[in-house]
Amino acid sequence: MARIKYNSLISDIRGRLGSFVFSSNSTGGYVKNFVPPVFKRSAATSKARTAFSIASNIWSSLSVAVKEEWQAYASDIEQVRYDWFGDPFFLSSRASFISYYILASRSGSIPSLSPPTGSKPSPITSAEALFSSSNTPLSSYFTVIAPLPVSFQWLHAKVLLWNSTSVFSPPRPLLFLALLPSSVGPSFDLSSYFSSLYPYRTESSSWFLAVTPLSATFRQGTTVFLSNVLNSESSF
Image: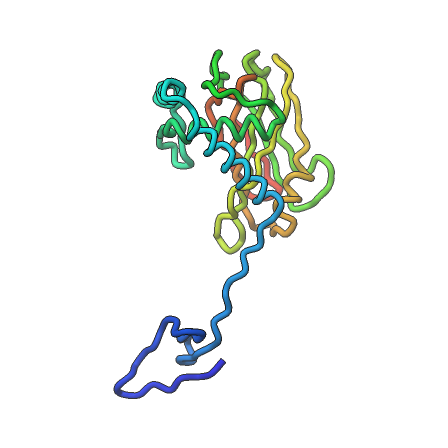
């Protein structure tokens, strides 16, 4: 890396020129060799890309009649979703199909080309969760306190970690928890799951959990959110 000395004619130089990158910091301007970034693709990332590609190709091959079924399904008021800020939104017909197909595929089921049928799962009425900075059994868990409705079949949990640097970690792979209909108060040990996603975490970090119930045909229910700092429990 070489330093740049500015004069009255040139006060700043930034950007890339061939194999050189010009920039500046608190000590002044500098130039360095351009090094192409290396994007490491994990096994999980490759699997997710493959699943998305397959679902996208299948969507392109669907008949107009089936796509219209997905359009009606996606625009139904029961398919409304809510973001982290509580604002409602609807997925497009294509996004609804791809989301459904990937969910069903990752659970080991054989996806249908038609939209899910049957009743929409009822919301979770009472639950608690905790994520820990340690990696011991049951140090990170999700517990359903109230009885689950019969329409439950799967639970989709997604964990996000707000690091001490105040930056959201990216969404992580799906976790499926098989549930028995009408089961009471099951507790799921998420220690190994959480630790594999975030092996390095500080006690000042905060966790966010999004939990979505799904029916046997992968019809999604209302997502509920829990959050707190590490080593602290949250419930509703």
